[in-house]
Length: 350
Image (spheres, rainbow, N blue to C red):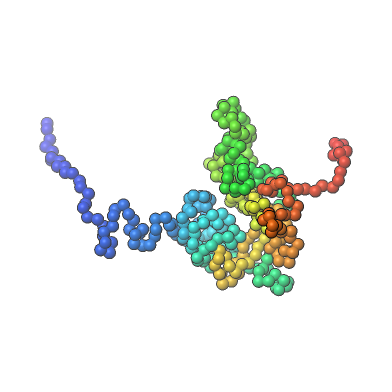
């Protein structure tokens, strides 16, 4: 039995010949209305993330090449308690708003930035300590130094500094030692003949990485390690809360090498209260946290101690910078430790 069907009539579809009109002027379909009429050039990015309940900023926000054209960043009305030092990598940033969060201090790296506008209020900033002699430190208030590690960095920290240091110390952006000599991502199992055949010139790490080392490497050199889908253990979190990337010690003593001192976990920290941040007058004092790679690196923050620092000396004839106690370790990986004189028998096993 045949059923009657309604015939289907087809006709070709044609693109409308009219173009959208904005304020009486046609706009090409391949162009953005905002780009042409709202003053937002194609090579400029404005990011508004207010009222998003953010507590942590993703590390990808500060990776090189991601948002170098970011000019406006608004993070108002969130739950941020901490701004990572890597924020100074936003080299194109002009306007930054981070008010109405829970931030207690700013990273000292923000002092290197040049902004047109900076909005920080309100935030529960730390109050400056009472000064015994308000005239001794001038207009700047400086806190006491807090020691984070011992007088000598741990072996893990020294190894991380070496692996993450540039192959060419004179070119800080060059390939790191880890990238140059290790197979990445680091395979964390015993080496096999197959791996050796695939990467004969690369070093194969023969065992599992400690959680702290794995998390630190991922923060400082993304993609260098495999990450588990499971959350980090409490032990790893306890050690990596402050590891967001490679740090550079601001001590003037390191300038004799042409580059700041590299570190992963800082050895000491100190706070100053600044009236100007990123070239913008604050209208008051804002706390700034400084990090040093070893004990004594932040002594330069106290004006009364500046005279005791042995700063680099410039030779006016040759234009060469000479530094007292200079050494052949431009990245500061090897730390000098003075031991009391001892004879070989003092180390004999009993």
